[in-house]
Length: 366
Ligand code: NAI
Ligand code: MG
Image (cartoon, rainbow, N blue to C red; front, side, top):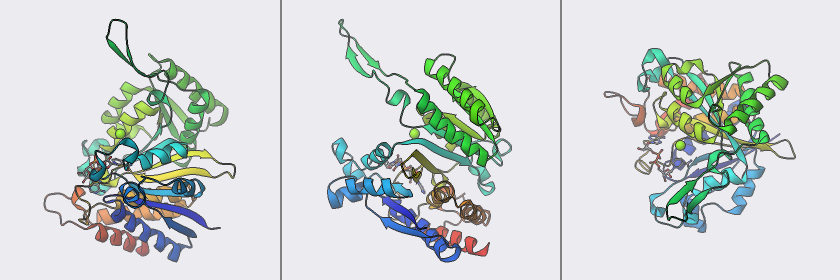
């Protein structure tokens, strides 16, 4: 049957790097029998310009009905002083919220050829391949009560509350356990149960889900502060990590520097299954719209192309196609091809287009 994909290139370098991912999609359609129907829509500043809104309700509906969404990035300095609802970034915030995208998957995989780009020593990161699963719709960013209150003596008090329910913990833990089964079979659950009640419950729920349904996976627990330290000391000890919203925000940004370039890192955000057993899913690079280099044809398209690989693996059940793309990326890097963001001193600089074409050529040569 035909897979429906919604492409949302967005702003800045978004359309430039999306064009390279679309070439890969067309190649898979022509050479590997991938049956896809592509629909493209404006979001972010591009949509504000055309429709006076960062994302139209119809586009949210299309996203809901698609098999998956491939997103570029939104953000345009032209709207930096606009009221909140007229900011490009509202497009991605609304998509995450309205599709109920509760599990953010951030892989940190270091390609051998980019060993020197890592913030850490080669012997600590060579072969690194970990995946952080961050809960994204709950926790301290959304918990009630929250607000800034003025006390009778005039001093102010800012309040946030970390809240997690059993169901919220269980569904994100399930995503982590399922991923581990497709990877190295290990999950490390991260919280601060030593000082937080929500962390205590987190550990309890993950432990009982493990016991009931995933005892084939190896489960360990780690306190979040120790985890930050361990990620720098010996990141290869981890396979899949699962954690709440706040700790996941920090730890996934930390992990991104283990591999070096922002332009290389894909992500997925998964939601609940609908009544037809279809899971909402959005795939995007972790970087933004890079207005400083937009229009120059110099952006690195690999994060977008690797986001497509994740889409093929997790939403379309096409792991062979995902691996083909990942091997091709690894191959072009091994050949020494570099966009400006990952180039060393003496390296020639490939354009966005040259990098995209090189990936296609490698795919064809395999
Ligand atoms: P950014 O990620 O866009 O750029 C940071 C730096 O990395 C810049 O110097 C940029 O040129 C470079 N860079 C990023 N991606 C690259 C690529 N593929 N190839 C080569 N170089 C690359 O972050 P920044 O500058 O903080 O934000 C710019 C805009 O993007 C803002 O409007 C922000 O709100 C938005 N943004 C959107 C996101 C999304 O759509 N999910 C995520 C992050 C930021
Ligand atoms: Mg962040």
